[in-house]
Length: 271
View 1 (cartoon, rainbow, N blue to C red):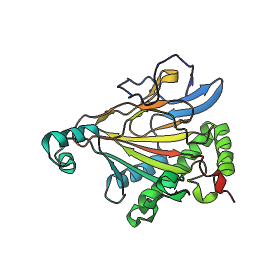
View 2 (cartoon, one colour):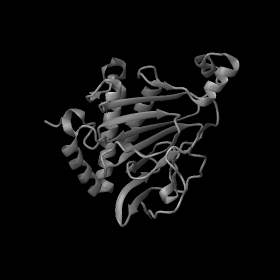
View 3 (cartoon, rainbow, N blue to C red):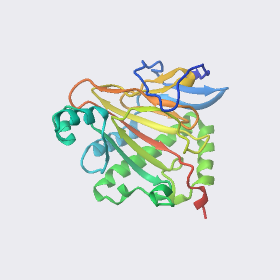
View 4 (cartoon, one colour):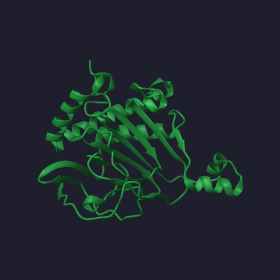
């Protein structure tokens, strides 16, 4: 794997700014170093069991077996107001982009929603979603093994951080608490402030007939080419980052990111 030493550069990007189209400049298998310490890596194409499990998970996610949250993209809202045609019908007519999301694993407390305690995602109670959840758990295990092989120091740190911060019932695999799948969702610049500091996320990408949807980290002037079956391991708590716009190149094009992440909201619940 190529070694990339991340060096901070000056920029004016702010949290909340829209991430524009930026051509990727990280295209090959790489390990990321900061101040001589490995903090993440990128694999252009996963293989073996991990690839098999992700194929199953992605297929299940796209089916009706998995409950998902629909997000109204601005182009759909605009066309709905202009034409009076329902948003669902516009999507069926191919006149907008469907954005979907699904969280599995642990959900942190949300006092503002009158739920001051953690829970497990309600998706786990849906019988038809069992295959998706199982495939994601198996994929998580394979991804963790890659972390252990490529950046073992990070693996050991994160494993201990989970032990110290997360009760067993709220763990997703050994290194994470939760998983989210984001279908056709770009993201403005943000930082994952709810994550356990020092830990990494895993982002595995599935795509077809679509461009864009790449992660940009302005602190290092780095844009990772999140191609189909790629895997990115990165400390999302550390820097602001955004996802470039996703553009379909033909009918039924999409970009789906399947993510594992470690939340810091569970420590007080350790018995």
